[in-house]
Length: 101
Image (cartoon, rainbow, N blue to C red; front, side, top):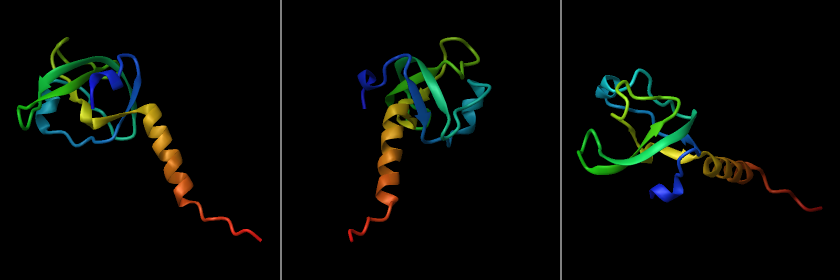
């Protein structure tokens, strides 16, 4: 995963919404799985649990309490277009095969 595949301004869908309680120190609201958001900024930041530097995003719809502070790990999101393709592919796989007569 790299920042180039998640351009600023593109829509993403949250695919993992289990956050540590500390996230509420930085945000009034947090992403919800299945909801769509707009990327405002992509930056490197330490992950809360591991302190490893990971790509993070700020979302237009969920600004941090203090401007410029806090973000959500990019791995929690998938580009909306990618999610649509995966869902369509999954629906096709769930369809029964047609029997040729």
